[in-house]
Amino acid sequence: MDKIVLSELIELLTENKATLFDKIAAERTNHINVVVENLYQAHNASAVLRTCDCYGINKMHVIENVNKYKVNSDIALGAGKWVETETHVEGEQPTLECIKSLKQRGYKILATTPHTDDFDVYNVPINEPMAVFFGTEMNGLSDEVLNEADYKVNIPMYGFTESFNISVSAAILLSSLRKRLESSDLNWKLNEEEQTKLKIAWCKRTLIKGEQIEREVRRRIVGKEL
Image (tube, rainbow, N blue to C red; front, side, top):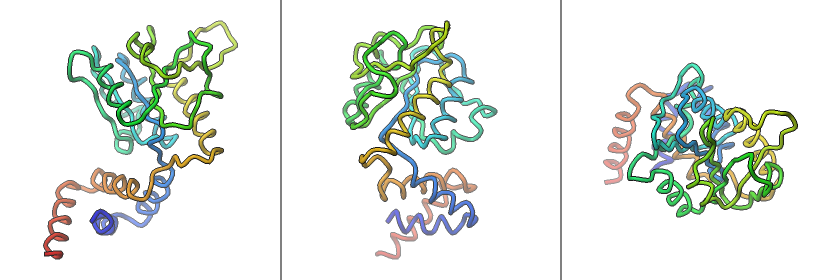
């Protein structure tokens, strides 16, 4: 049914928008998820969201142990409409719940930290789906993430400063991972079914009363099938 639904929703878009959806959805990936933990500066979290969109990352997770995440529209520049965001706030330990959920979905946990020689952005394994964790600007990732990480990853630096700003770190790391995936034989892009569902979601966010329109389209299709 989703293909039929999409075909009807696409008709309500401009030709340029429909073509753009096809082009961008074909470059999206779930092989990498990005996770930000307890960021207290909204502009940094929003910049990471924008970076996710630029590098074709389909999903960003937000862990709110203390600080509440809010998109800064001036910095995200609409990326919040195109990147799925999953917020983890429930329970006594949102960080561990997020990690548990990701591992159950088959993701390896990558903890970004300058305090490791285990792996860097150029040699960390990419053969399995990965969730890349970024921590607070001052304190980095929590012990919960570092203890549960499958891989600890650093970004090589050659100056006096110990670490990059989080949005810069995300851009460097995602750029490297994306290039390595493109050079690999891995099946890392969204499949046809995933692309269809994604484009339906984009249509709903683009069209005025998109949710209502989608429901009406589905009811009409079901009525025809009966």
